[in-house]
Image 1 (tube, one colour):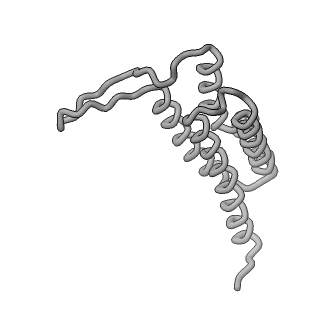
Image 2: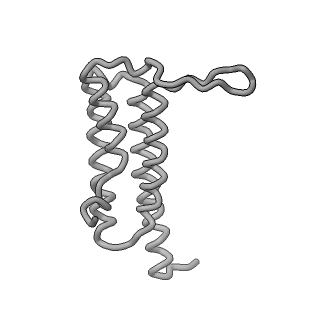
Length: 131
């Protein structure tokens, strides 16, 4: 479980989106349609599913960032590496021009910033710096 706890969970939607784009599957094609009481229909495509998975993974990543120890440094480094890889892929690869890809890169950026912010706040509390 130790190695799995360090795994950046946002890699799951990133891998899913890369696989869908490399095989040429249209990510905007509808997967499910839900009728609402207002007679409107809510249509879910791969974009929405990947972003929901990404938001859930971001929540779990922020929870993981509250843990202290040497493993949290590795977790932050892997999250930062994932962000850099996705940013380079967005800038250099043809599939990076996708709106879902941009949102996934932003989720990774929020993960990196939130993890470092939470870690600094936890470390400040543990050390006892007060104004």
